[in-house]
Image (cartoon, rainbow, N blue to C red; front, top):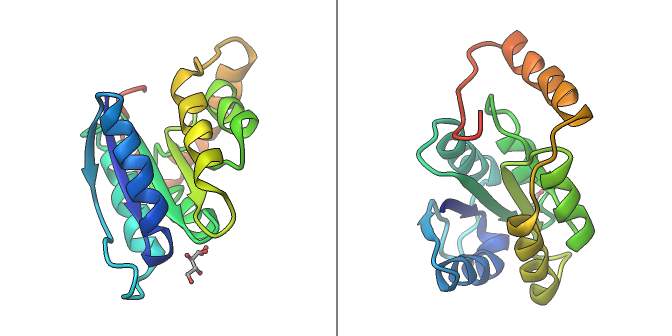
Length: 157
Ligand code: RB5
């Protein structure tokens, strides 16, 4: 699969570890920056870049990192078609994919250890989005996108 990755200065270290892990697994990675942890930048720029790549379908899924994962997920979620989820462990990563069909997974470099983050990413990749009752709920989320304006079609619909 093809992944977009992005972070602010606070997430550079963990983003690099996650990107390397994806590449070791054979995935393609496009890095939207930033890559200098010593220069303070604004997380919305990088959350939006990852979100747009997912929404426009140039990648399959996104990975976004900031200090807590919160700011960059809020920014990514402003892009229509994006379902960005901050995860904290294997369980939240699995459920974000299975129940919420999250297409951008977000991490906090200052709040999560690297091993836990890598395990959570593996769980996210292995999880299969479930249908049934979840599709109706996802349709309601998409309707909110539609109400807000143009909705992009992601690779997953
Ligand atoms: C940057 O200092 C920090 O505010 C940012 O990385 C993130 O944690 C915001 O949600």
